[in-house]
Length: 426
Image (cartoon, rainbow, N blue to C red; front, side, top):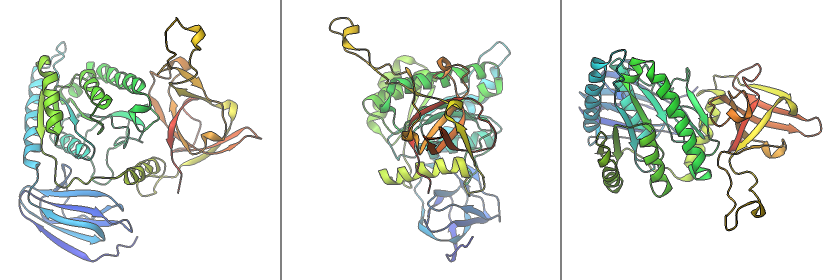
């Protein structure tokens, strides 16, 4: 793979950062020549080239000074001496103290709990970046915090359209991202909660309850706590969903990025709860606003990465099965009860968690489906998923479906969930 750009050295003073956007026409290599530096809270190894894929945006921050070398093309790269990093690391120090207290007071009978941090703010305010830093700094200190991702629009743990959680045991790799050993994933199937708000809330609750059960038997996870990333929809129903997440996960710290009004509203609401701290943080000047097209492209990259790997290093398998081998369901909506069957004056309403069997036809082409662990259809809504498949062809004549799966072999379940998550493979 060619790195066409010129080699460039950048000297960073203490508490400064190099903000980089990799060019779309090729990867970028970068290494630390001297000093110490980190990307999103993860320290860079000295003298080792790291390769960043096209279009990636990141910042290299140094606490004490560093010299960086870059090889390749960038859309932009510049140094900044005004960053909110000191306030971010101060938050980490407070959380560290709470984890230590939880660990010290933990006994077999005591359910002492480490911090449960929820990061909120408008779209493109740096929520994912702050989340990664807090997780990486905690992992570096030997904790195993649980990362919860409620942002179905982008998806940091797995593909968009899902809510997920995973323990983070090591600082997050600046290139590879979150390791995917055994994430707990619920498939919502849409990229905005407004498609079915009640279903979104049901899945958030299922995820929270499963994590509570896991925490109850694991003192280490309990003391390490959670870091929860949220979506950028913060008004109207989006605000209600934020309050729902704060309650459902029993958050103890709410970090608000760059939004005075949201911070004030949340402080007013949680005041009555007593044990919840709402902290306003400045957003980084390096945060870039992304338009709809850029977000769409990023979603496509995430889905592609699931099947093919970050650098096309995975080989997904194409499989052909009979229509009768699979049972596909849509959750929510479905036929409404006729007015004649309802009490006088009542309006027909669609059931947000109603299961509707889907007739297999060519409308399923290019859709991404979740493979449920459910053993019976009525367990589908409350069950997490094993993974995802992508429908590449439907032969109505022969009644055969061709799909792409990340690995060979039979699917772990025959019940599939469909939403409107599409991807056109390029």
